[in-house]
Image (tube, rainbow over all chains, first blue to last red; front, side, top):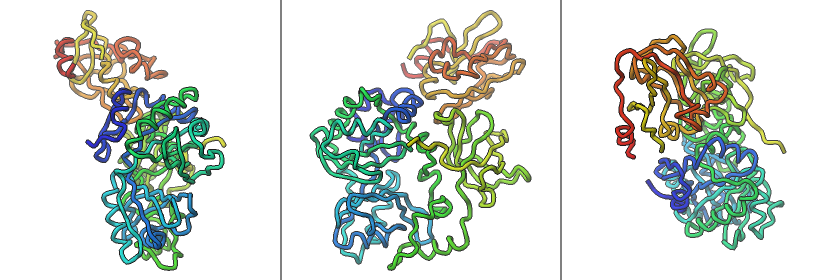
Length: 365
Length: 123
């Protein structure tokens, strides 16, 4: 297992470590429920250094990304970010991505750790013929996130950057605790929060400064276990669960990220235009089951009228915030309407469940 | 991880406290820690006949669900109703308030002593 630049910090904190995409990652430090609740009510500190970073630079970097991805990165303003996807020719999702435009001719593409080895060569291939260079720079970045309602106060105490004017999905370069970082207002928890890109050699100092500044704001270190329940409550898809090569963005309810009107076309455009026309083959829905046993990924979803399998759970867990189980599932399109009664086969028992709108949880603003 | 000397243990990380022909059953601190925060416990019903080594319930944590294996042959005579409101007792007090059920044991269960269990979990 590959250690992150913060490995010694996690060990000293007594973290439970787990293998994730080849990395030794903290799954929790103490109680994952306490970590989840800290992010919802105060703040949590995450090591996300496993994420993949790919740099695309050059005069035609924007055009190359327009060709490679389903969105229109050339239209992203400098200092802003967009959620996007890279799809195969058949429209299948290869990965979901966050694209930061750091400068006019400089993009940072952040890929899932498990997919960076696929995304990087795909971008290289798709950028050929454009005046643009693609480089996997994952080893050059550590990534630390501070998420939760108290995160702006914690960050503001340490940086010369103007935190209140840093908008959601914006990124700026500056110093944090005297260390050069890129500070983004992004996250994967459904809360306000920040993601801090820094050099691996500086990661322990950044973590220590954030921990200290966060003490009076209820900040605690938080692991991947609570990251998963936080994103699930917030209805955010996870690659490998909700997203895969077998579906297009339309089956994920994310057709809005597909820009079919790009003048120069993109990889997968014909298949995606056809899928938009014919409609999604399944729909991603929220399900709230009765009782307290939680559906998990892979459990069959059934039509109560016939008992036929009409879908599958992609993620499911007891929701710490709501106090009952929640699940996301792919179901037959005609059964997507909120209020529809379905059933889930939970470890040999059929449990009634109701389709509900996603997300399960929305933060108060 | 605490392993009280006066209890018997199974290789499935349950403990038994013998009281005459009955035994109180719970899961060990090691198991509770490995599960993470237990949020729901599905216990056998009073009167149920259980068979050593077979699943007789479930322990559900945020991240996972695990079978609860019967530590002995016998009849369930009492279950810990408090876990319905506070399954977290399994984590906070695994050898005390977090007990699971009481079984009237038939035959002699195959168990480890504290030293044997400590060896099993590598402590």
